[in-house]
Structure formats: C-alpha cells, structure tokens
Length: 133
Image 1 (cartoon, helix red, strand yellow):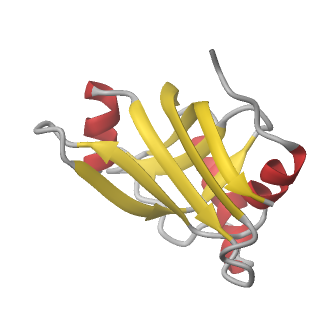
Image 2 (cartoon, helix red, strand yellow):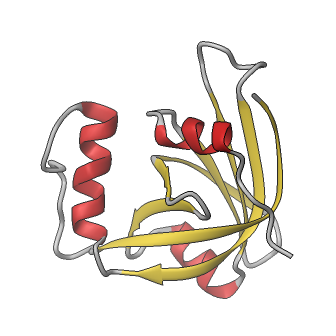
C-alpha cells in the first residue's frame, strides 16, 4: 500500500535541496547519485538523462530510495522515502529540467540540453516515508 507524503514533506521536496537517489545495481549493491528532486504531491519526481546508470537500474528493478535534508536544519528537516518507480517518460521532461534549472540555479533554460541523451521524468511512488519535520 502506498504511503502518503505529508504537507511538510511536500514543502521540503519543493525547496531546492539536493537529494540522494538510490537504485540497485545488477548484483544487488546500491548505486547512489545526487539529483535534483521535485514532487507532484503524491510521487517523488527525479529528472535524469537516457543512458545513465540509474536509468538502467530502475528499468531492471524499480525499487529505489530517496533521501533529502535541509542543510540549514539537517537533523530537524529530513525525508527518507523507500518506494518504486511507477513511470519513466520523456513526455514533459525537457520542460521539467528547465523548471528544475530555475529552481536550483535561477537559470532557464537548462544549459546542458543534449539531444543525444534525452531527458526522462522518473516518478517514484512511496511505500515507506520516514523523516522529521
């Protein structure tokens, strides 16, 4: 049964904090990558590019974890999500990376668009949510 994100957790995900995105390698070992993060209120949303290790991992095994904390209050505002990828899509991904670029860097459009590696939106449905707010 999916877990729900609380309003304060959604707020944290909407703020420009880096997240750690954990996927599982073929041998079962964890692969961790820093990512920009977003939410639609239900899913944790990651934007990545085709060809990345994490993309191959989630296509093979959709189980993931996401960790976010506020560096100004790292023990008071923390969110850890265990869940599964329920969608990988190119639809809207280029516009979404432009939005994230503005959120994190104040620049639009994203300066590193690469047609050889199209952007992907990855939607994670939480199964377990832990944290402090």
